[in-house]
Image (tube, rainbow, N blue to C red; front, side):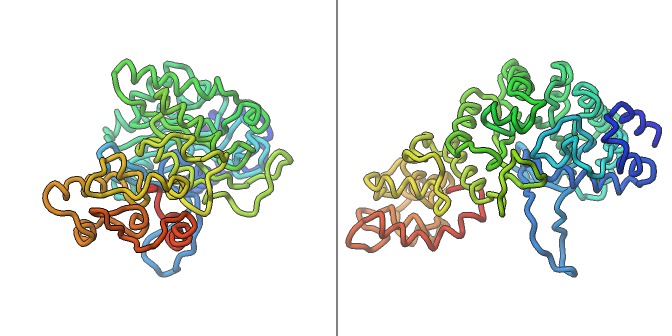
Length: 425
């Protein structure tokens, strides 16, 4: 096996092979390499997982490992656990924000396609996972890397008859034939755009360009258009590593959605892992800003909001309040909404009321009289909605004057809860 691994990396630059990597390949066991490559994959958020830390009790139940296992949602709504790894963290690119950049002196490792397939199946048999999330640094060249990743997936599908979920990262620069095969073998594919403006991309990732990163997404869109299906690809944008504003980021996301380039844009708070003059110095990653972008993205896709409505003339989303509540306070003329008469699109503009609650309200008022007690029995959250609705003209929040300052002060206590979820409901 050492000879196979050596052949895979023998043509890499000397800077990658002269230190820790060859030592690990020749003497390290499979678990050592798996640990390195799962840790190297933890900053990719193109599945619904977190790179955050939290303390755990040493004798508690469950595992909060920083990497290795992530979660995503299948097409039928199930939450599935995935083995999340890189095939290799060797990479010929020098992306300044990436822990695996070519200049970094970090432990390097490679898993062969056969090892990836074996690990996936064995983890599946032990009920640890239900699928695989596979990405990679670029080894030798894009086609060589993509071919090795596809060999792992082919082995899973044809040798082990593995029907589980597979998310495959597309390698920018790989041929259309290989991207097409990835599309056919995997359940989901993705290609990270990473930054919004090309001048910033060239400065921080000199080997990359927008045309290079866009191409895999365009190929997948063409394949899906031929089959009259929705685009299955996703992409990721790093938040806070450059000067792009929230509006810049969401403008690109909106463009991608309108052009059916991707099904989902993921936002990843910049976590400083390298020291470089072109990188910002920050004390804490902008996780709250990332969260607000997810909430605004949800409003654009499912709530009928326009981009300009969410910003109100600003370039950044307010951190102290979710974007839906912030819009409501800027547009008090829209409120209060009468729950016994409002249509679906009016209801979901009320802070605290999402699509599920709106449908419950519409169904309930067809069957009986709507009351505050009825809403509570249906599980409709009124903690924020009560400031913006009436039932038969009667407000649920007793006040002599419906003012922005009054409601804003009342809403402050509810905002701490909003950081725990991913939707603005």
